[in-house]
Length: 282
Image (cartoon, rainbow, N blue to C red; front, side, top):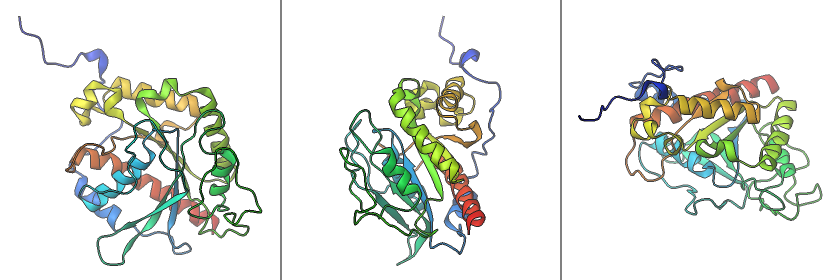
């Protein structure tokens, strides 16, 4: 007897538990490309933070790839499992027309690691408050002090972070060391004190679930993905409606509608949350 090609029902929900219109790429892309930020800032500032090797740089590159409609290169990690971002690097994305930029920027940071490695939590907290100048080189053995040339004593709303984005790899959420989770919670606590919105990008969904690797449209029917999101919620304390599972571009040379849609869903929410923060704060 031949094997059935049907997916075992225990692995999936009958219906998607988060609705997605998989034919919506063009209107979503139009919304993203035409997005206007609050006029009281030059651009919305989005800070991307996470453990080393989580896919932070890859997420920023993937957003650019979606918006440009082609494969792009910004700061893609070529060293799997290693933190290759050593500076506070801010990416301004080109709209494709000469000199025209999107009204939002992404700040990339050194990965969080255990012990005296990786970025200091106080450095990340200082970035949230606008105290750290772009280009600052992270020093795992010494955090930034107020007397440094890289320390901005009088940050404006433009310098401050308007949305904090954690990137966590779906396939490793359960085994991320408690020490790293504690560091993330310290940063999260400060963001909440500052009323900065917090989003989690759950990356590498294709590595966490074979069904999703085979068909990305299964993402919100996969029990594995929902369980990973629930684990993310319980470990970090970010509500499920602020957690967005995505597949970053990392080996593809052409855009995929399904990959684009998931990234656009996340990006649209991030930008709206950041704009809301600026409106409340101005």
